[in-house]
Length: 258
Image (tube, rainbow, N blue to C red):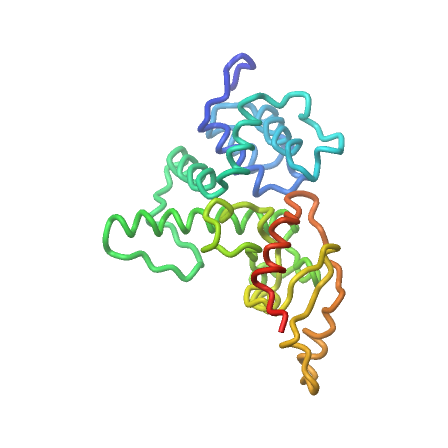
C-alpha cells in the first residue's frame, strides 16, 4: 500500500476526484466499498484515498466556511485540480473518466449510457460521442449524488424519474458542461419546464412561473402540478450548490417572461 512520501500523480488525483464527485459526504470513509475498490486500483491505502477525497470536500465553496476534515492536508496539486475543474469542467470530467477507464480496464466505446446518443460510424465522430457520453455521465452522477438522488423541488426519490438539469445550457458554455454547480436535480417534468424556460428561480431561489403557464383556465393537473410551484423554495444540496451567476443567466436568457 501507499507510502506517505509518495507524491500523488495527476492520474491518481483525477480518479479520486471522480470518486468524490459521485460519493455522498457520509460515505467518504475507508470502509466504503467504493473507496476500498479505488484503493486497490491505485495501490493506496483506503484511509489515504478517503482523506484525499475529504481534501476535495474541503475545497467545495459550500464547505469552506465549515470545519471539514482534510482542510489542513490540502496540497497544491489538490487545489490546482480543483481550479482546473472550475475553469474547464468538461475537460477535467472527460480526462477523469478516461483515466478511470484505462486503469480499471474499461472500454469506453463499448459502454452503454442511457442518454439517447447513437455512436456514428466515423472514428472522429465516435471519439466525440464517447467524450460526450463520459461528460454527461460525470455530470449526472455528480449532480444527483449532491442532491442525494432527490428532486430539489418535490423530494421525489425515484432515480429513474430524475434528471440532472443544466442551468446554463449544454450548447452555450462548453467549459461548464460537467460543472455540478451548473446543475439541479429535478424530476423529468420540472426538468423539461426548466429547460424550456417555463420556470426559473429568483435571487432567493424561489420558483418563478412564466406567464405561459399562468392562463385564465388551467387544467386541474396544470394548476396542481405546475401553477402551485410559484414561490416554492429550491432545496440546496450539501455541496455543489447552484451558482448564482448561472441562475441569473437562466433567468435573463432562458426564462420566458411573456
